[in-house]
Length: 460
Image (cartoon, rainbow, N blue to C red):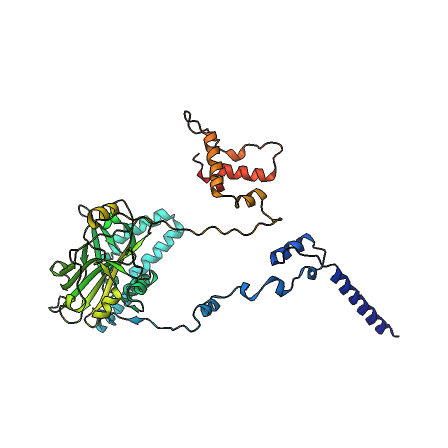
C-alpha cells in the first residue's frame, strides 16, 4: 500500500471517530432558543460550535419568523386598491406673476449680484471675522447695514406669501398633520392665498394662528378676526368654515362645526351670511390636542343657497347633534359651486375654561377621558438570567402596589411631622458604604441616592 493511500485511510478513520465522539458528547439544552445557545457557547468556549446547534424545526416555525412590512401588508390586504390623490383646489395661482415681471426680477437679482460695493463689503466682513472677534464683526455688520444695505422686510414677506414656496410648504404641513385625509379623504388642494386668523388676547394684543401652533381653550374663547386678500371683483364670494376634526364626542369620523359664514363678498366677513354662530373649542380633559381648521372656499358663480343645496345648518343652536359636520359630504354636494382656496389651523388642548363651556353653554356635564393602558408584558421567569441583578429581575414580577407601598413606608419612616424632611448630604454617592455589602445592594444604594427606578417618587 502506498504512503498516500495510507494517509487517506487514516484521515477517513479519524473523521469517522470524531463524528461518533461528537454525536455522543452533544450537551442537552434546557431551552432551545438562540440566546441560550449563545450563553452555552460563552460558558464552554473550548468546545466546537456545532455541539450547540439546534435544528430549524426545534427553534423556529414559519409563524415565528420576522416578516417585512411588505409581507405584513400582503397578509392584511392581498390586493390593495391604490388610488392617487386628486387635486380639488385651484390648479393655478390666484394672482400669477406675469412673464415681464419675472424678467424684471431676474434682472434685478443679477444687478444686485454684480454690485461692486456689496462685493467689497462682503470681503471686508469676511476679513473682519478672521482678524477680529465675533462681537466686533457683529458691530461692524450692524453699523454698516442701516446705511448701505436696507432690506424692506414687509415687502419681502409679502412677496414670499404670494410665492409658490409658501403654498407648497403649507400643503406639506397640512399633509403631515393628516388634514387632507380627514377632511377630503383622497382629495387635497394647494393653498393659493394666505389666511390671517388672530384671536383677541388683551387690549391691542392678539394671538395669531400659524400652521399648527398650540393654544389652550381660553385663547380661542372669543370670535377671531379673519382676513385674506381678494381681487375685489363684483361677483367674488367666499365661504369660511371652522371645524374641529377631533372634537366629536360620539362619532370617530365626524367633526364639530364651530363657525360657518357663507356668501362673503370679497374679504368683508361682516357682510357674510352667518349660518352657524361661533362656538369656542371644548376639548375634553384627557383627550389630548385637537386639530381645529379654518377652511376658506371660493365660489364659482355668485352666492349659494346652502339650505337648498346642502341642508339645514345649526345657526344659533349649540346642540352637538345639530353641529355634527362632515367636510367630505359637504364638499361632495357642493363641489360644482365652490372650491377650497386656503386654510389655517391650530391645535387646542383642555384647560379650566372648558368646564364653563360645558356647564353654561352646552348645558351638560364635563366628560373626562383616561387612557386604558394594556397590562405590561412580562416574559416567563427563568432559573438562570445572564447579565441582570437578581433583585432587579425579581422586582419586575412584583405587584406595583407592593413596590409603591414599600417606598411610601420608607418615606414615612424617614420623615418627621414636626421636623420635616431629613437632611440629605450634598454628595451622597461620595459617602463610603459598609465594609461587607453585596454588589447588588451597592447598585440599589446608587439608585436610591440618584432617585431612580422605584425611588423616583421620593420627595427629598
